[in-house]
Length: 196
Image 1: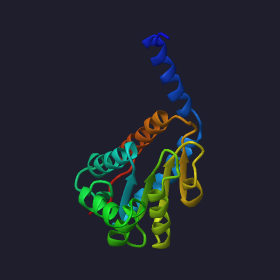
Image 2: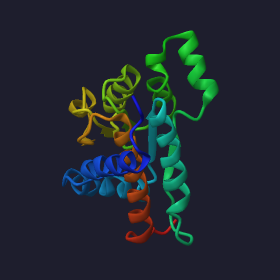
Image 3: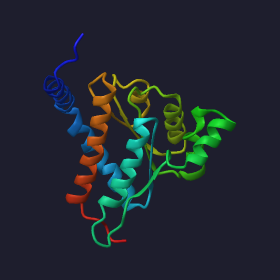
């Protein structure tokens, strides 16, 4: 069987991604997340990002963009941590305990009541993501979940879920990265930084 022509495949992929972006859920979700992040910045709270695989890369990307690209003058900055970036810590917990604890145990060390946890999971069912969110809630953190495929269990346990209406992991991850860039751009362009 011959492969589909490239131009037709590209057109279909773009159309499917566009469909995943066309629902009001996106603006509604961003509208709920922005005040939470602004409150965290104003009160000096930390925002923790975490995910597996491609979502781990998105978590790191979020921290880079929100931590750096939103800086305006000498105003207060966002305090962000990607729990995926400490390879030594992640592998120690995975090896010595179990992979399901790699993020929740870091929150025990680092997080405080009033901080924010942003969980990223395409399926919404990754055990280490769910355990970290449960730990975050028990510690008094606000929780955000970026997911797809109907939201999985993550949708039910976070304060603010954004569920991409797609069952394609590629489209879900495309939209999660777009959310990162949307938030970064809005926080940079539309919200003045409070005094340090």
